[in-house]
Every structure is written in structure tokens, then in C-alpha cells.
Amino acid sequence: MWMVCVLALVLSVAGSGVKVPDKPRLPNFVLIMVDDLGIGDIGCYGNHTIRTPHIDRLASEGVRLTQHLSAAPLCTPSRAAFLTGRYALRSGLGSAGRVQVLLFLGGSGGLPPSETTFAKRLQQQGYTTGLVGKWHQGVSCHHRDDHCHHPNQHGFSSFYGLPFTLFNDCVPGQGSDVLADLQSTLRSLTLLLGLGLVTLVCVRHCGLVDLSPSLLLFLLFLLFCLASVWVLPFTLLRRWNCVLMRDGEVVEQPLIVETLPQRLLKEAKDFIHRNQDGPFLLFFSLVHVHIPLFTNPDFMGRSLHGLYGDNVEEVDWIVGQVTQTIDSLGLSNHTLMYFTSDHGGHLEDRDATGQKGGWNGIYKGGKAMGGWEGGIRVPGIFRWPGTLPPGREVHEPTSLMDLYPTLKHLARDTKPDRLLDGHNLMPLLDGTSQSSEHEFMFHYCGKYLHAVRWRPPGSDSVYKAHLFTPNFSPGGAVGCYHTHVCMCHGEYVTAQTPPLLYDLSRDPSESRPLSAQSEPRYHEALRRMEQAVHAHQDTLRAHVHPEGPSAQLSWGHVLWRPWLQPCCGTFPFCACEEQVHSAD
Ligand SMILES: *[C@@H]1O[C@H](CO)[C@@H](O)[C@H](O)[C@H]1NC(C)=O
Ligand SMILES: *[C@@H]1O[C@H](CO)[C@@H](O)[C@H](O)[C@H]1NC(C)=O
Image (cartoon, rainbow, N blue to C red; front, side, top):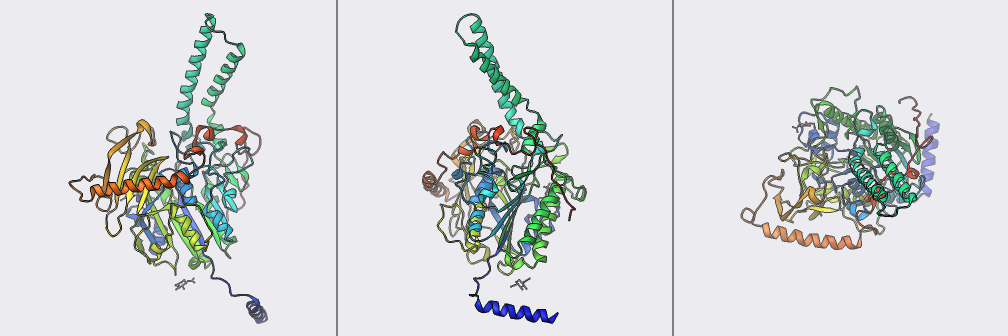
């Protein structure tokens, strides 16, 4: 035995003799993002009836941000901004109309190949980069296997998870999210075309116009196509959108939801084990707590808040498992862990059994509302023992877009980059700085600017001016229950002139708008914010997707195309099941 030790010692001494001293070790990153989790769902954010001890522990051992903001109130744009460090409209993911997220895996929209993600930058610094879980940034552009939007093309050397998202259509009997909206549009289109066709036939019959039979036939064919899409069987939609991939390969279709959380967790743990010599980046993008909710028997009925609460407590358990993996490998002092949600909870997700879409605490509004705080204020926790002070709280405005420059900084990446909207968070996290570099923040709903935030230096105030507010329905409700999500434009919003101004430091629930009489800095605040908007818009002109801020979410890019559909087995009935080996 001791022969081996001596040999090892000799070898290591010999080794160090020839080696130039290494640069200090690069830290690992574990980023955990929950889907649709509200800030009010977590114990350390003031919820005393839900049990989230593992998340709370990360906060007590690290830094808790209380004004952490997503750059958009919906998945696709918020995640694009998170990954790129820039507002989503710079990548062409700022919606102009009703479609605010990618609707089909077989669409051609997504995070453009020309964009750069933090994963790509870290990869270039020598990191092993992995994504486990939800992506929702598109797959292919021109043909099924070009994978131009795929995580592997965007800097993740390994990917295991959902190229799309978990949604109700993935579980039979849970109803439909995607079709509901699309169906009404298609129904009107079919009706219009049908009426038009009947009129044409009548007119032709009367000899008023000369219509070639082939044109008639073509119109009839078009009508047939529209009608068949409109009555698209739900089972096919489930096959097309509920897909599990490992790197470029479809491994399960349709997704088996019941065992999904365990499989994702196992993959995340395996990734950490495999790469424990580091440096690595793991982006663990949970499919919880988006609906449909999971019904894991180990957590069912345990919380005081129904199935939704059970799911939050399961998330906490998963976070605990990941933390324990890091700690048990002795990696905690070399690993920055981050916990957040992509945007606020979904208020309109409720049924007879109760709330299914999260709780945003004292903040007004929720998911799909770009201006109101409940849609964008999310949990933000950083833990890095030995480097970040335990128990620190930061009340300054910070953004999910700050991760990109922060990770770059820690990976000692100083190479030139594009214009970023985020800032390096390290000075705020370690306490060397007390104030945010975000003097202004712009709160978008799609491509439309809905609100502006101003954090005047040297003051406690945080002003927010709303330029547009969503029209709630039914009247008196907080939420858009008639459309299920709020829209960002047109008749769905009210322009506020003059803007509605609040001071969040005194009125975090945005319930008492300020006036020139009640607020001495009223005019100054509005003027400063207007100037900031102009300066911001100047940067947009030069740094935005060449085809426009909404290019990736146009109907042309969003609608399903058979030749782009990821598929295993025989198209269009795509079917395969992952071979799961023993659970541990
Ligand atoms: C705690 O979270 C649950 C689940 O979202 C919610 O129903 C409840 O109102 C929250 N309680 C507090 C005190 O925030
Ligand atoms: C981590 O760092 C802290 C403070 O520097 C030290 O007390 C602790 O022993 C370290 N833990 C490990 C596992 O290295």
C-alpha cells in the first residue's frame, strides 16, 4: 500500500517539477431554472406554509436577490434573453401579435444560429457544457436534421431533455394549450374560405365570372387542408410536440411524463459525476411546475397547497438532490449554484381543484404580463461557499440577463462580444458594490415596451412607469381569464398617457400611482425615463435581428411544417420509447 503512495508522491513531485504552475481553477456552474414558479411559492421569499428547506438552505448559505427580474414574462423570450444576455427582441423573439412563444417543434423559428449563448462562450473557455431539461428555443430551420436552433448548436456539448416544453397536450385528458388558440384562428379562416368558395361557385354558375375549374379545384384543396389542420387529431399533436431528445436524436415520442422527472434528475447527477474534474456548466432546466402537474406518489398530498404545492415541494427535493451531489463530491467551494424561475406564476391557470399556476406573493399580475411586477419578479439565489458571503441579501434590481456577463467574467473570458443588456453581478454578490449597474430597465411584452424602471443612484426609490397595461377580463379580475394569457398589443392593452408611475420601494404591490402632487420627483422621473428609452432605442436600431424584432415568431416561422418535424419511427406517426435501465 505505502509503495503506491510513495510512487504517487514521486510522480506528483516529478509532475509538478516540469509543469508551469496552473492558473487558479475555473469554477463550475450549476444553473437551476424552474418553469413558471412564482416568487411567492418559496419559503425564504416569505411563504411560511410551503416547505422548501433545500432552496432555503441555498439562500442561507449564499446570496438571495429580492429584486431579480426576468427580461420577458413568457418562456421562449425570457429564456432567449437569459441565454444571450440581451433583450429577446434583439434575437427576433419579441412577438408582434398573438403568438408569443414557439408553438410547434416542427416550426422553423427559434434562437437564431447567429446568436451567442453563455454556453458557447464557456465552451470556448474549455468548459464541458450540458443542458438537461426544457429548451423551447426551436430545433431546425430548413430541413429536419439541420438542427440550427438545437442546444448542441448553441454551445451545449450535451443535451438530454425536451426540445419543446411540457404542456397540457402531453398528457391525454388534460386539454390543449396550443390548439385552443390556433383552432379559433383556423376555424375562422376555414369558414371564410368556405363562404368565399360557395360565393364563387354561385357567381360562376350565374355566368358572372369565368373561373377555371383548376382554380376551383385548388381552392377546394386549400379548404380541405385548412379543415384537416383545424380538426388535427390531438394524438398527433402530442406525438409531434412532446418529444424527448438525447443530443440530436429523438429517443422518446410521445414523451412518457410519469417517469420524466426521475430521468432528468438522474441525467443531471450523472453529468456532475462524469465531469467532476471540471470545469463544467450544467443548466438544469426543470419541467416543473408548468401544467400539467406531476403526480409523483412520493409527494402527492404532502403539502398544504394541493397538487401545485406538492409539485413545488418536489422541486425543492430535486434541488436538494443536486446540492447533495455537488457537496458529496467535495465540489461546493468550486461551484457557483444558481436557482431561479423563467418568469412569474400563471394566475389564469386554475380550475375547480384550485390554483395550478403559482403564487406571486405581494406582487401584482403574473405570467404573460410584461409590466406588472408579478410577471417578472422571480426568485434568484446564488451559493458559492468560501467566495460569496452566506446569508447576504441584495435588494437592488438585477436581471436574468446578468448571468451571461457574470459567467463570462468568472470563466475569465475577456474576448470581444456583442452589445449586452446584462451586467456582471459579482460585485453585488460578494458585497464589493452596493448598487446595481441597472439604473434603467426596460420591461417588454413581446416587442412592445410596457414599462420602464428607474433606480436613481443615491436614493432608496425604485420608480416604475407603465406605458401600457393589459386589459383584464372579466372586469375587476386581475388577469386575462377570457384569453387565458394576456396579450401585449392592440385592443388587448390600454396606453397610459401620462404613464402610470409607482415607487416600488414604498409600494411594491403597485397599488397607488403617484401624481405630481404626491411625488416631488414625478416630472423628473418621467423625463429621465423618457430620455433613457430614447437612448435604449438607439442601441436597438444597430443591435437587433436583421429581419426585425419579431422575425422568429412570424406565422411563417411558427407554423408546423412536416419536413421539419423531429421524428423517430415512421412519419407522421412517429413513435419510440426510451430504454430505461435500472433507476439508479
Ligand atoms: C404559499 O404558496 C402557496 C402555493 O403557491 C400559495 O397558495 C399560498 O398562498 C402561499 N402562501 C403565502 C403566505 O404566501
Ligand atoms: C470551503 O471553504 C471554506 C471557507 O474558505 C472552508 O472553511 C471549508 O473547509 C471549505 N470546504 C471544503 C469542502 O473545501
